[in-house]
Image (tube, rainbow, N blue to C red):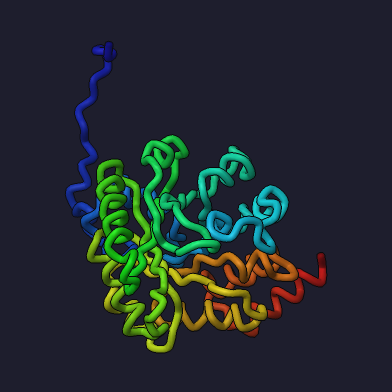
Length: 292
């Protein structure tokens, strides 16, 4: 019971200081719930408004591809340098130490592999996302694929329903339709479909005219790294995307298949968060890798 002997009337009401009604620092999030905003603020650096996500979910499609043979040896040591880790539940549970405090974006759809027809996916149970304390959930949308577009959009819409119920942001991952041109018109359409269906984050590919893709998407856009590039080219990819308004990167192969993954992570962060040029980032990469 409260102590009744020392009750003091409030006398500091800040009458000359109006309530803060400024916008949340990430676009499109003003009307989101407190829980979604809180989780988004774990993923996106509050100073730069950007994120460097480390993606290692490739194995559910590709198996032990180069650089992902041993998650415990190749990915876990990079975790501290990432703003967010994106992986599948099996690899997170078996290979990422539980004391890791970096936010997790859980890959929540699964289905076919590279050995069969792609994109015939279903969702895993939301209980796994909740029990693993994830900061975001991700699922793919196969926009432009006649066989799987409808089911993947339906999966994604259901995942957004779950995310809204439990205040967990959802990231839409745009897959490339077999017959679709890799241009800003296609990626703009695919990104907008993600946002229209309730995405809090959109992951898509950089292309010429990317500023139009970002402008037409009302939530943060992060770029996929795609196939392995020479380190300088990968840093140029990051830089160009940021200059076009991207809110960060979700890189996998361009980090874990690098000759010096830890140095590459640090170089990417320097470009994304601190505005370094590709040349400056590459100098940092060389310096760190040579020291190692």
